[in-house]
Amino acid sequence: PFDDLGEARRRLAALPEVQQVFRLTGALILAGVDPTDPGRWHRQLGAVALDPGGGPVFGRPIVVAGRLADERRTDEAVVDEELAERRHLRVGSLYRVRIFTREQFGPAGEGQFVSPQGPAVDLRVVGIVRTPRDLIPVAIDQDNIFANGGELYLTPAYWAHYGHNIARYGILLAVTLRQGQADLPRLGADLRRLYGDRALVEAADALTTAETLTAGTRQAIRLESI
Image (cartoon, rainbow, N blue to C red):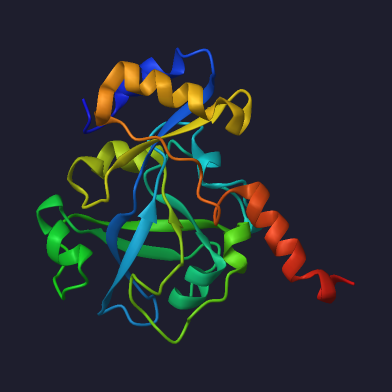
């Protein structure tokens, strides 16, 4: 049950303080091919909401070009501007992505040189997006999963087809509360009642919460805006 959290999602959705709840993965460990260098795999992190309609848990992006991916398609994806620049992608590009399997999680997650052993998919880039955290300075001169903040957003259909064997950093539940942070203590109490010490509640990280990040961004660009 804690491998896909489906039952946990249903139980949380029934709590009175919960407005919405979606499953999402921690980062998927993948490898992508730069269209200008097709003989080389580059390690790439991916993000996906397991449940249809769960895309907003990653933030509500500005669509810079193209459109958002069709959640029913396994072969559509969107990327942010950093990944588009790193891999020379544009709307309409095919981005070949291959999976590191769950057995490869250790070496792949540690950055060791290993070849991905899972299936490869030619993803059609249908959109380029921007979120507030994309305004963080980018280290384009480095190319590894620790410096590469470029985001590849996949679809629930992709997960349904390939997710059983993708190396990943766990599965999480993202919860929207009816009264926001004010309901956090109540949610924590309910989870302790339901799961004891098997569940951990954390508020959205200050670096990625839309309200705090937007406020910080506005302060940082205020002079240039004026």
